[in-house]
Length: 379
Ligand SMILES: NC(=O)c1ccc[n+]([C@@H]2O[C@H](COP(=O)([O-])OP(=O)(O)OC[C@H]3O[C@@H](n4cnc5c(N)ncnc54)[C@H](O)[C@@H]3O)[C@@H](O)[C@H]2O)c1
Ligand SMILES: [Zn+2]
Image (cartoon, rainbow, N blue to C red; front, side, top):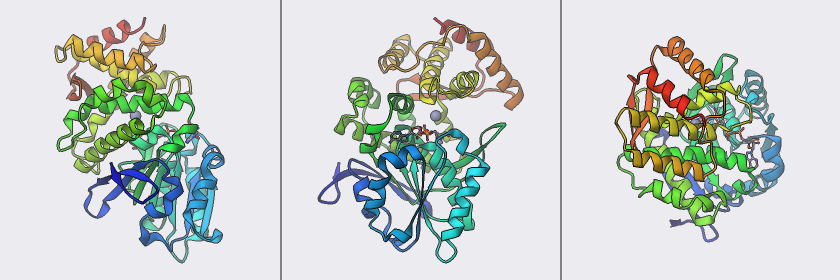
């Protein structure tokens, strides 16, 4: 832990990407100290805060106050609180506001919300005047450990999510753990799915020391859900460190290094697609089920021991995430996965655990193994 200013303490992780490098700050009370954390070179740029009504109501005032800027230098746009905001329509609204305030000096955009706000406003920042500076201030657990880091920004098309986007790194990522206190339980679970994912793949990421992340997480599940100070800070910072390192290895997703982050996601997407991306199960919960299925595929392929699979399943069960396939949907899930395989890329590349903390990629898993694992997971 590194002491920063007198009145607050935080961890700092640097994402090293040459001229695109930036810091991720993780700690408590950061929102109240935001003006010290935004790089000073943007002190004179007019600000556009992009947020949504939920986050604005809960935390908007704190952010505006701590920016310590004259009122006429801060502009706010609220977008609809929904995945549907990752649209051309919302993108255009943000661009229009940037154009109103940004004709003389490039504005600084602050993406203040979850992954939806981060993705659409990051895409606006990437494209307005061929790129303006932006800072991610993620307010969900998922956004703090995942979507705010790495510069993937996008909007959706009716055909699929994230089809129109860019790689565009923020100038800083500021993760205030205090804002998580207002998150509903479902959103904590959403983030927990991704956090457990990092615990199953961290040994693939060389040159970082996150100790035994899986043990840390599975020993502290209650503390995590209760957002206990030290615990949440350490674990969020470690996950951010892993994501940062993977991004450093493959900034533009062209060296096949980011694929490990897809652990559990192939199965998860099929389940989410079955439920039409409704709120029934969050993305993170589906990823949790996906990781269980991936472990069992690996077991059938003789690549992981049963004892490790049991430990993975136990941790997911104890965290209250999805650990069995919802009743009666196996055959539909198989159909969706079969369709994806045939029509999307001809073969499915599975990321599978071969130890706790270690994964491998396999594109030769027989469809019968997949089917069997899906059917057996429905209890
Ligand atoms: N860019 C990337 O690398 C990347 C990675 C993963 C996911 N994503 C994207 O992220 C999006 C999902 O992000 P998300 O899970 O954060 O969802 P979200 O942005 O929809 O936020 C979830 C809910 O939490 C509410 N909320 C946010 N902060 C809150 C707070 N502090 N207190 C109370 N409520 C709060 C939001 O208003 C929303 O209702 C998806 O669009 C996904 O595609 C992007
Ligand atoms: Zn995910």
